[in-house]
Image (tube, rainbow, N blue to C red):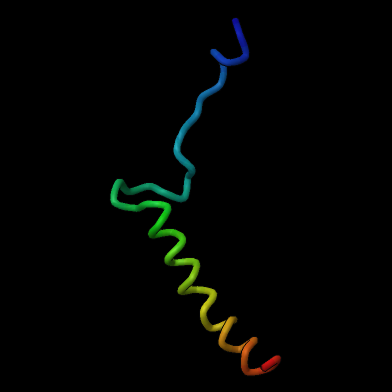
Length: 45
């Protein structure tokens, strides 16, 4: 049996619903990082 026959490729575990996309995940990341970016501008100018 070849190694390629033993491998199983699936979707990452972070995306469970069909309507969740990589673009939506990146949008959530940007929303989460916004407070840190604002704080960095306040502290470091």
